[in-house]
Image 1 (cartoon, rainbow, N blue to C red):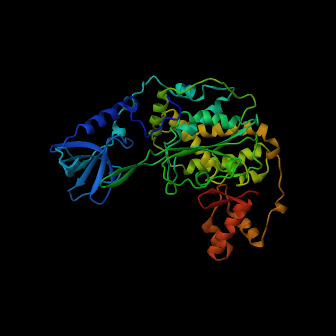
Image 2: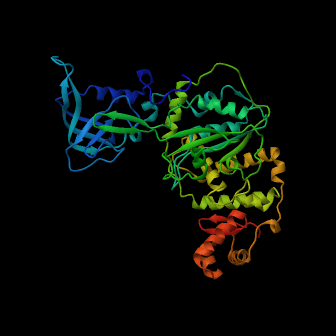
Image 3: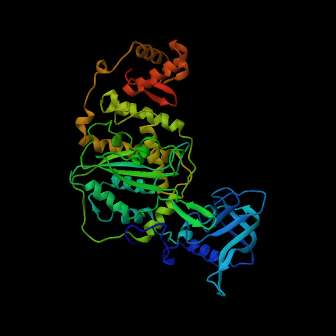
Length: 473
């Protein structure tokens, strides 16, 4: 496999996948002045015209289709079109020449939706990958030159490459920040090894220009690498701070950041606070100086796993239980309660560490291609989180042992009133915003502003959606 394979530049048939090859061949055999029936993926060009592509990510050929039906197929839908092929814009190649050229167009008289190929096809057969190729083989190819790496950190690197399905309003993917016990740039070198497997253009939109207009193709996965020690770009900031599906162009995207330092300056640093997995490369890790490119099968395996969409249980109950687990871990490690807030490593706000642990469970499920998720599978993310907590605690002990005094926290009389309400009504799962609004005797907008301030300072955290608990009982 060549270094930095270009996803949108696979002109060689040797790089086409078997089923893709079959579809491209069928498209290339379409001739003018024939009635055809052919299936493909819809990409709209203008109000009346769409392109039909062999697969959602095949840019080697396409058919321009003019829609003569009263219905419009949806963008990205997989349909079978029927109609006559015609020349459009037929013209002489040269003056006085007997040669003509034009644009082949399908006049679509009928179409129907079909089940997308990738949902009813054996993906190993589609991509031409032996079923003997396993996760163990993939991990070997991905990490081959890297020595003395903990098994769990190797799994974290696999997770960020394979990602996760999207769930609820969130895009899929795993964000990782890799700190460096060697303080020699090893974390950057390790991530450089991972990049050998990822086509450099895989997250880019490929624009196809036709005589009728342009259309775009995109593979719904992005993999980004950045420097945790420098100024974070807008894209990196977005991948850390806002991972809702409406905010970014991908259904799944993973971010891997490297640091030359063995620890963050504080747990509030964005790369540490907002990554799903902030961890540290061991001092003994090294990379062999050998010429090595991963097997092309590892690229195919990655694509297959990206398309694995397991049935995901509603996360609400799981996230609440994970938030509770953060509290017990703070107690068992005898940590400052500030660790439960956005200023701490065990941020118990439901959309913080609990959601990151949930993502690690989803990554484990995808890596092992599990279709229906049982409760013990969902606990895998917590196993990984607790291993990592023990691992980084040994290296970041000074950070974990820092103490704060509530007397040093900004305080207001109104904060005290809200704390008393939460203390009165909390039965272990927090107190809803509605109860706080009813009891506090202030305008709802003012109450919400105070709750937001108290969360930012660290007085309270969100145990469940709009349900608050005191950091200090």
